[in-house]
Length: 328
Image 1 (cartoon, rainbow, N blue to C red):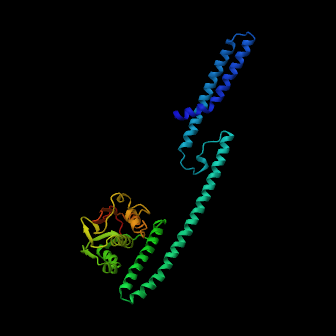
Image 2 (image 1 turned 90 degrees about the vertical axis):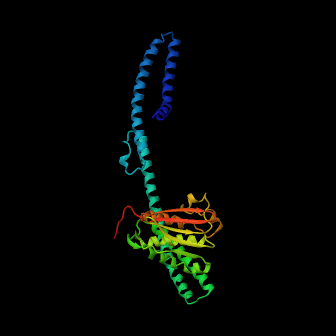
Image 3 (image 1 turned 45 degrees about the vertical axis):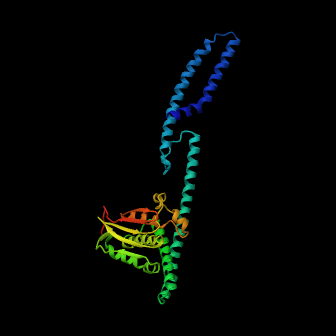
């Protein structure tokens, strides 16, 4: 309020200066005609008191209007604006209404463009699955080192397509979650099976012991998270093994013996588009995998954490327990 009072006085300082100038003119005229200056002083003092009272009333009204305007974060309706008292108020109201209409039109146009883009990329992602499936059928009829490598690359393409679809679905207003109890081992085996060729081709071992655990989750979305985490483990593990185990009470740990993550990169690995030092080395990194995993885990009521040591490996932990459970 002190700052507003200072600005208000600064704004009305010219009127006070004009009043002082008039007093000086009257005083000079009385002096030239040898009239007593007291005849100017008393009326000037009374007028000054009137001006102060008038200025105080105007300030209180202006301060109230200022509080209303500063409290408005969004102009939802014209009724939220202060009452029009001057022509300036009417002009400002009209300008605000025009700006609000322009913003509404811009928002509608942006929304339409976004929906068109989502529809296009969703259609593209579904159409690209057809040639991918055809290539997979062709490669299944061959058993050679080249066919296995091509099958591995094709699987990577499929995961990128699934990543695009997941990104589009998460950005929509609704998702097709089906929350109920699932067998965790079955989901892990289904996810690992997609990478069997890559495990064999790269001579990496897998340490997985079934736990028999049941989890409340969405099977499709959790499998997407598992595939992303296993894919990352394979990508950054040139030799050694990948361990998948269940820790108490209900935490799934996916640990590798890969190159690890730099300490300065760990706080940002879940940021959208962040690839870090490893991503700059591997030009194929997109910086979307872990970002999508965290968003999906939050939606499913799970949590995801990562610990890593450069040169020794990385461990990703999924806390699959849920405080609020909705079983279908």
